[in-house]
Amino acid sequence: MEHLINVKDVVASLVFSCLGLVMLGIAFYLFDKLTPGELWHEILEKQNVAAAIVVGALAIGLSMIIALSIHG
Image 1: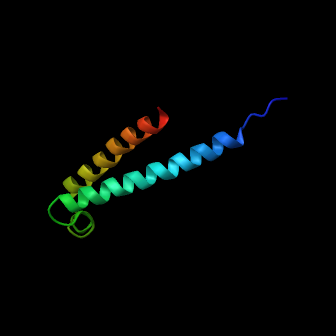
Image 2: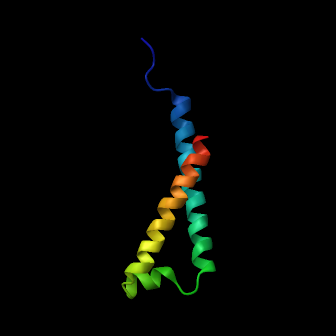
């Protein structure tokens, strides 16, 4: 019976997932520093929905780019 799960593939997936999360964090940090004001202050304390939508769109867009670049 063949092995259904290859350990090498699982480890590679975990490494690339962590790498993608680090890249997403760095990109968000740079976006936060390049834009005026503090995004978390705007979103959490001032309840700025527009800023939350921008951050959500940034996260989705960057996640798609990172996933496609890692996938090949």
